[in-house]
Structure formats: structure tokens, C-alpha cells
Image (cartoon, rainbow, N blue to C red; front, top):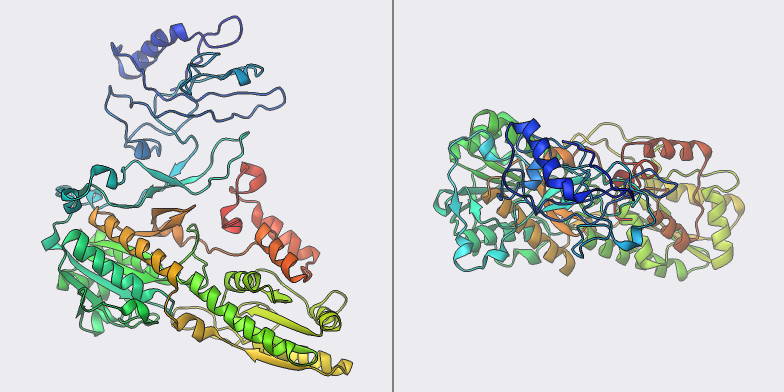
Length: 589
């Protein structure tokens, strides 16, 4: 509902007529005139400068909902999904020119600005322009879903629990001349109301896909959270990935079975790729009476988890499916980072240090290190930045060329002439356009990659031999060493929070969701939102620029590459269009 308020002679709103205006508006909408006042309605106003007609945000205040003094369910109300008022224009009217000292008016510093078109909005919306990304809930298809008090409320104060209306914004870097345009996610954490009794829960944990540091830590913390915080005693492990649902027996998990597994690499449950026959999996889940499923895996695994949720929903099952994203490549979108990534960078740095020692120890020595990174070069980039010993870093997102002026071969010759040695780090997915493809796909449907490390080493050798330079090249491939180690201290703490967030969400009746930190705050995210796209390094971004400054390497750019990335940036999250970080290409910058 939008109303233009009457103005005083100085151009500011006539606040004395606010009550009568409100009454008229509400009468026209709902058919009766209110007798109550609206002292808590949040107020935001539009402030226009002489040269700018774009609204600026001014300190919104938490207020009341439309219906009396009952607080609005702001997270749902703002989404316009039928549970509240539609999310139209959310700009609210300023109270007075001088302000009241509580953020409800206009400060004196803005007195030079002219007011234009202030509007009144009857929805409570402290985050104008945000789009709420709701997580599915069991209540959407189970009408008589019971509600229970969280057993933690017996020993913890109420402020330990998270307000259901708390949200986490995907974009926190805003432009004051533009309205917010950000996805909003429910903040993760324990809720006071849950939908499962401890004795009715039958939980299963499964790990899928490749290995990653921290898998055992996540398994342990899921078990410990269910056992010690919620009193759940029926917890099972699914052996060897999705196919274990219909080809293996479940194993019992308790604090005793998972004791000290965080010190081991890999996963005690075993893992595999593929095997996601959704109908057979859900049949097995239904036959075994499982109502909590915790799925640990990458984007393909998470898509499988979402398919399980949809199949269970179509059958009307009381099953919650919680995903915990895992990928050593750090290419899961939206969340700040995936678990195991810190450990992978640390281990990759050790390999780079070894390559540097080898290179320094011989005339014109070259250390060549290949690290993981099928489509995203995060490990290569971060490990190179951390080591400070790298002369050249190659990633899938930034193309390069070998021959000619400014090419890689010329750069290698120059660097050897300057320093007498060189260290090269290459991600496994880099330069695949130069290498003869291996052909075929693996069990997860990923295209098999050619070994760019061996190919690059051969190219450098042939070039240096042709120039008559004496050299020594050592090739190090630590790929499986990196992913098989236990997680470091940072990842162990991170895995604990991820596991607890997943269990809290499941007990609260959420399903079809995954967990992770968004701008440092842990959130529940719909799986469909996370698997839409992958998180890649932006070769036009600030982090890659930092890498180039550290290594001193050229960007190997050409006009077609620049045009390609400019075209990718021209989407609804473009910086120039919205004034905010392009999350697809600028995550972590």
C-alpha cells in the first residue's frame, strides 16, 4: 500500500496528519477504520541529492506487524509468498525533518537534501529489496505435524536459541545510492520448537563422492549432536555411498564408535561415486524407518539429496534430508568456503615448498606442482599466495597461451634468466583446451581430464631444449596426499559447526536444505539454490590481481577472453547494475 503524505511548506511531511492518513488507507484495504495507534512501524525514507534520484537507506527500526501488537513474521512476510504482505515498494515515510534521536526521523545532516515521493508501507521490512530463500518444511505436506519443546531448553537460557525471523544476507557490501538486492537465508542454529521426539528419531549418515579432509569430523559431530544435545539413540551409518542403501547393511553409530575418528583421513563409512537410484534409496529408507538423513558430499551428491527429498515428499513421508556440502575444490556456491579447503591449501603449500627447494638446488631448476581444481582454481591460487615462492600459477578460469610474444614459454625463459630457478603451480583443470582430452566420464558424470601437469612439463622441456639451456625439472603431484589427510584445526572447528547446524535444522523440521557460512554467519540454504552454479575464481577480480602481484606473472589475456568475462558479468548481480558484489564471480573478495 503506497500513500503520498501531505507536505508542509518546507517540503517535509506533515506528520501530524499521519494517523488520519493511516486510517483512510486501512479503511480502503480492509473495510474498517482502526482505533489503535501504530507507534512501532518501522520507518525508512528516501533521500535524494541534487544529482541523484536513487533511494538511500536510512536506519530501519524493528516495528509491529499490520495486525495490532502481534509481531509480524518478517522473514516470511517480506517474501510475498502468501504468508504476509506482498513485497512491493518497501520504502517507508520519514517522521520529521529534525528526527527524534531514535533513528525514526531525518538527521540534521540531511537537511540539505530535498524530499521527494516519500511513501508509507504497512509491512514490517527491515531489509528492503531482499529476497527470502525459504527452506522446505515438513509442515508443507504434513498438516498435523506435532510440535515439541527443545530438550536443550531445560538447561539453556532462551537467548541460546536463534530467532526464527533472523536472516543472513548473501550480499553485505551495499551501495548507498541503490536499494538492497540480495538473497536472504534463514540463520542456522537451535530452535525452541522442534518436530521430533528423541525416541522417534532414526537417523542415517552417508558420505559420497571423493575423499576430503574433515569427513570423519563431520560424522563424529553429527553423532555427538544427536546423542548429547537431543538424546537420540538410533543413529546409523550407510556404507559406501548412496548404493549402500540397497546393497549394504547399516552400521550402528554412537559416541563410542566415532571416538577419535577425527584424527583419521578418509571416511569410516566408505564412499563411492554414482549409485543414486532414487526410487530404490527411498524404498530402503522407508523400509528401515529412517526419518533423518544426513548427506555429506559435493554438488552431485547434493542434487541426489534433493531428489531424495522430493521423492519422500511425493510419498508424504516424514523424512528430513540435510545436506552438508563437501568439495576440496571449494567450488560450492554462496557459502564462504567448503570444509577441507583450508587443510588442502596447507598441504598443497608443503608440496610447493618441496618444489621450491628442488628448483633452488640446481642450475635453472624448475619445480612443477599439480594440485586439485577441476573447474575452480581456488587451491592453486590460495596455496600460491600462501607460499610466496611461486613464479607462475595456472587455473581453469584463466586461459593462457604457450607460444609467441608474451606467451608462457617466453615467460619461463625470462624468469630462469632473472632468478636461476622457477616454481610453477597448475590446477588439474587448467589448459584443457591445449591438451588432448582423455575422453569419457567418471561414475559421477564428470568429464575425464587429461593430465595437464605431464603435458605442461613436456612442453617446457621441449622449449628449453630448443634454446640450448641446461635445466632440471621436477614434477610433483600431491593430489591424493592432499585429500587423504585428517583435517587441520581450522577445518575441525568448521566441521563441528556445520554438523551441528544440520542437526538443528533437521530437528526443527527443515528438509531439502544444506548448511554453510554466508558472510561469516551460518545459514540454512535450499539445496536447489546452492547447486544452481559453481563458485569460481574471477580472473578479473581483486583476489586474482593479488596473485598476479605476488607471482609477477602476466595475465596471458587476449581480447576474446576479456569480452567473454565481460559478457558473464552482465547478469542481474552485476556490480554496475546493482552496486554490489557479483556473487557468482566475486565470492570471497
